[in-house]
Length: 131
Image (cartoon, rainbow, N blue to C red; front, side):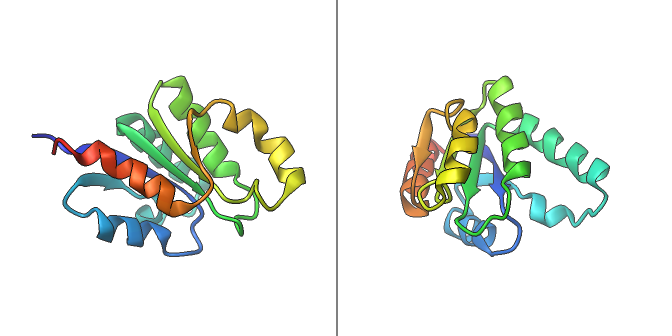
């Protein structure tokens, strides 16, 4: 049986992607933008959007400390246009009202929104039931 392909959208400063990959290593195929190590924005945007398109699920994690969320916003928008399954963990909007007001348009394009990482991961795990 084929494994679902999951794109990991979100901040690049912490190790959250590695934690998810270790937790679900045999349940999903992961596309992690942190792995490509590209620095030219044209090149990494091409890589990122290519793998958003190839993915079945976009797991988008907006940590409280993410300075802008711009990259995540692009990836969610593209995934929504492609009608991908999107799981959004939005910790930042709960602590920053100004950001929450600006990010509302992104949240409105996503059906599956969680305020903490563990809840989002528990939902993601449901997609591995048949692999």
